[in-house]
Length: 320
Image 1 (cartoon, rainbow, N blue to C red):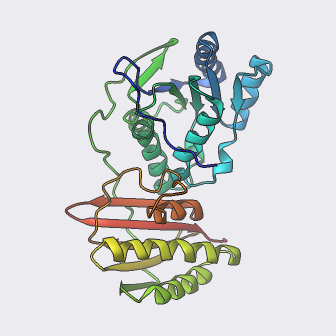
Image 2: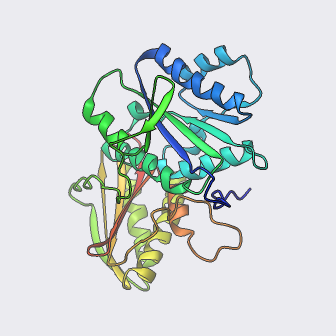
């Protein structure tokens, strides 16, 4: 099934996508906020999609007694890459919102299960991108519970900057920390360790790129059955780089913390922040390279500036 983003609202009177952060501490506060959000939806005839960790799913199921308007989904089916989650949410919400039925989502990101700082940074970026992805939807809204038990003000502030609204005491209000109207500010990419290889590439070098990456990835411990997936992703990114990045670029690869990374740098610029995050339509021409990379790799980092060009890093788990 091809799932696209929601259509533009038909009139100015329609409300925009509502994206709330709900900081809580402990199971009781989690239940209080999420159940309040759910009961508001049920009273208004709305459907609800819930994607929370398994222990929180048990808590909510016990309270809701198999309420038919509430659907629980498993985010792990989307895999570890946060770059797949916008399309997953679009599919879940579309499936539940038959016709014009309003849909509410509850999505608790597994912040504490982040594999490394790069993964954590991409999880935050996903939360910010939800505002762009669903800005045109007048029938969707989302609550993002955030476990603040550790009371880390820096961590909470970083997540808060991605949410335009904040919920407290069953009420939501504008979030003063939200990066409204601003471009997302990325954390700097973590510098690579000594690369296993580095090469300049241009037209006609795809076979060399695939060979070098496959050999290095195999030596790094990437499972045999995933080398083919990595080869496809590498081919797509290198092809995009040559076509849109000035005809040439630089490739580096290295292993870090049981992860094989390959990095493509070129002079191009990617203006669409949603590139690779939404499922291509069947009749779409082009635009599939980044989508495939997100589907095949465990993490994809993209940094693109007009003044500095584009860097794309592909992560693939290696066996320890």
